[in-house]
Image (cartoon, rainbow, N blue to C red):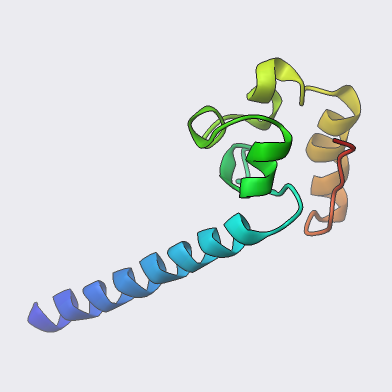
Length: 99
């Protein structure tokens, strides 16, 4: 049991450290950037995203993309992209918005 507990702590620490590093990288990106989960909820956003779109982390993180900014991201072409094109063609590319 002791060995399992130590192994779990080490893995937890490594995952936590990776999460902290990933958030630090996102936060320092110059361009507005959001990271979405598979349900299109905001996992993280860069500082420049918050500044550009005049929002804060509390109003952004964990929210559905389409609900951000009073629905300003609820755009039919964007829905088509995320709900049809990306799942069919893969979605690990750059998507740009005209802010």
